[in-house]
Image (cartoon, rainbow, N blue to C red; front, side, top):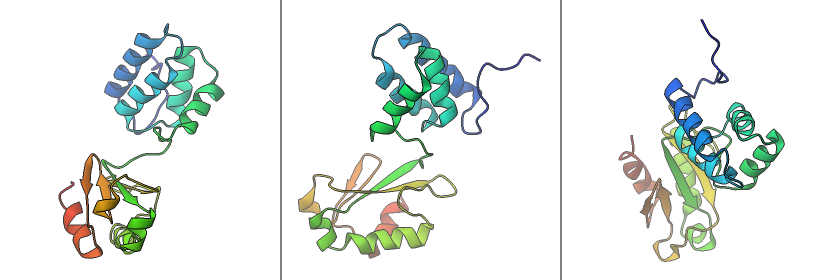
Amino acid sequence: MAKSPHPVHEDITPEMWTGIDRVIAEHKSVSGAIITVLRECQDIAGYLPVELLDYIAKGLNLPSSEVFGVASFYSLFSLVPKGRHTIKLCLGTACYVKGIKEVMSRVTNTFNLEEGQVTEDKRFSLEGVRCLGACGLAPVMVVGQDTHGDVSPDKILGILDNYT
């Protein structure tokens, strides 16, 4: 049996590697395409583990340190697994004053989930952010692309029940 050219990684399926190979091949000769390649590969794999970063670097004929530097610099990229749904809770002043910390506590206690982590079943990731630009809806939360305003500890679990 022939050895696969892909590194072994439990979160990346053979179908994902096929898509990753396609992305690298499409952009291999395009100068400055590293951000595009990282974004498209993250869309395929869900995040950018070190093995994938090294594979991208080799495919684009770039130093691994350069690829890692780009991936770790931009907040768009994640080097750790993400849940199917990312919960972003605004920790800005308006949201803080209106009780977002209590909402955060309800989420962390209910789902055994700390900021920057993913639930064991990979359902949710949790991020505290400085501002979501919706102060009039404070306290505010974004789940994926959905914005929820006037969230409270009593409402939060009902809202999150809609995300499986």
